[in-house]
Amino acid sequence: MQNLKTKEDYIAYLKEKAREIRIKGLKLITAGNIGHPGATLSSADLFAALYFSVLSINPANPAWDGRDRFILSKGHGCPPLYVALAIKGYYSWEELLSTYGKLHSRFQGHPDMKKTPGVDMTTGSLGQGLSVAVGMALAARRDGKKHRVYCMLGDGELDEGQIWEAVMSAAHYKLDNIIAIVDYNKIQAKGPVHEIMGLEPLPAKWGSFGWQVIEIDGHDMENILDAFYLAKNRYNNGKPIVIIAHTVKGKGVSFMENTPEWHTHAPSKEQLEAALVELSAYGDYRWKN
Image (tube, rainbow, N blue to C red; front, side, top):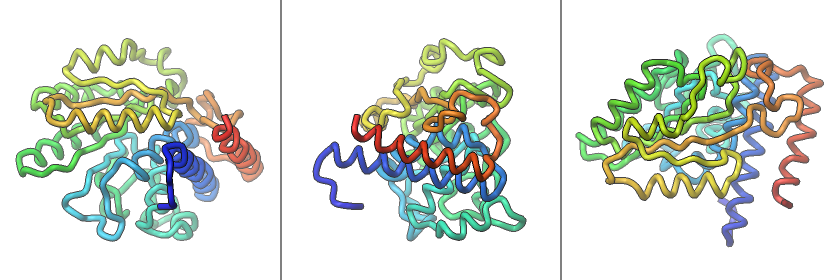
């Protein structure tokens, strides 16, 4: 990590990582002609915070037993995960970019724990990741391990009934070593979440199941870091924690923002060029304001 002397330096460093994840995520999707641009852009700030500040991991030893576990329950949103792992050094960016989505590649459209270093759980079918996280957290506690289990969920994914069984189980077993993160961009594959299956009052629902709820602006890096810090400090209070991150689908690219069509749709090379111009300006703007 570069020399970061002040909190402002640290925030700027993580914002740059988020911008790198956005840019490389879109390049990846365009090169492979597969992926989900909207979710890649909405979750980039969360991935930057997780992989460059929050998670205790070791790229030189991906199987280190003491590492925190991360499960991307909404497996279709894997480009920012792949990019973050490449930047951390689990594999090269060149390999990722040249093989993503191709036959026999270890970088498929959903994460595969048997193929990709740094991936703790294979995911793809929605609604199952949190159940696995509950099992991992319960096993860690019974084995006397101190690591935490993080699980990122999509808002459309919350339609799945199994999610709420896992929510209920985590509270029942008082799993305070699990932190769920909801990328709440409010748009799913076929349209706005509130039209397909309304979630509100979402914080109250999680709270009624016995979870500690933290609501944040999922694009405000200081807000994100404060939430993760607070979540870590609530360890041993007997309650699982959920961070509900309000985000914007397609954040940072004007023609992708809040547009259901960009849920799953690879940009053309011309659209990629236009997006990269906006993302460059987007980073400069945020840092100066």
